[in-house]
Length: 121
Image 1 (tube, rainbow, N blue to C red):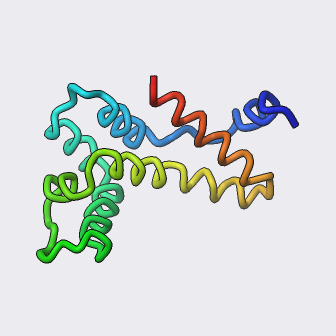
Image 2 (image 1 turned 90 degrees about the vertical axis):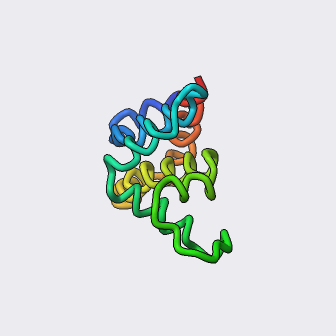
């Protein structure tokens, strides 16, 4: 199967959720303010919770509890935050592919690659 065929077969996949796409777009824009980024993240309670949970994980070795999104973003940085958002947004897509019993690995990799290319522009 060619890459073109794989891409055409993925056209029926659900789009990245609007909030996640907006967050990624804001992160990729160097003129975005931290306040605008926080507002977009807080529009999705699940995303806010994920970011806070990861910032409070033992991996980052923070001694006090991280309670605000501002603190979490400063600990994680924009690159890690972007990866968290992208992973959360594509998680549902992967589950759909598994249920449909397709060649999940190849299609998911192509889809993620396309997302990365689209968001680099």
